[in-house]
Image (cartoon, rainbow, N blue to C red; front, side, top):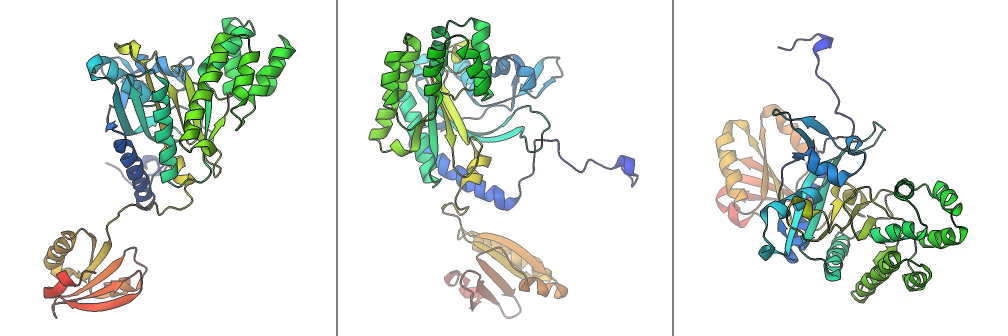
Length: 422
């Protein structure tokens, strides 16, 4: 049993990387999620839910080398090492590989889920990610990547995030370029680590020692650009089929997206490299000019599902709902939200207040009770977060309705309340 001793007080802070979310922000996020949900479902995606923990062996495969520094892990009661999911792609791949048959493919899944990743204790570094995403499994065609990118671009537009950009890249580009430079595996891994860390100075110094000419071509392509016509000319210069074909693939995707009216929203950034090792083709990241962080990311992962059974391809993306919220120009994202009523009345008449609130809710309103004692009348003078304030007068069988939006007021008999709700 706790007492007042200082040594027995509970911790008055959260573990680093986590935070609380209050009702106003939670409501705004729910509005964002509803817009995203409608978009997912309009394309035929169905919601999937998976456990928050998985066997570490499964998640570690996707997290790649250094997974111990990326995953939040612990031992289960049976002695098995388990980890909190670091993203939703691996759980969806597991479900697909274990539970689906090829006759059920292709399959379209979407999710709203919390993911967890280990990080250093730097100020502001998150370990908790509120994600919204989709996975399109069972297709290895270019049309699958185009569909996923189109859904993503439409969501960003529906959220009215101004001047967003989706940067396109390809895992095979770096793989092919490493072979073009003649790099052994350890050197190729070094190059990838430098790119993930965005250490282009150290990378340039390393590659120029191998070939200044090839290094010049490589770094010309590293520059982010909105000119996708460069891809064809550079694909002819690079004497490696894997790298050249990756450039052509990205160009083909962009040309379709351009026809769909999304040209201004896409850019080329072949320096984009993800530290999750299951990606096998197209890569992309989402940016907003309002914040510096990456809002979301995704790509193709054709070899992942095979680890769990079925040998089928997949592609998808995840958006960070926290960062989407920060990116909005306005927080009143249009959703058909019900009107909110604060219903005030004497606490001694609580039964009648509850009965009246039920009547109001039956009309679709949100009703918050404010039972008052004689000393609580001053509460009505304070600012109230609602559309309407209903002040009940059961003695006179009436209710005063204050419209808090246009500051008007009217008095309605309780018997006529149904006709006076608006």
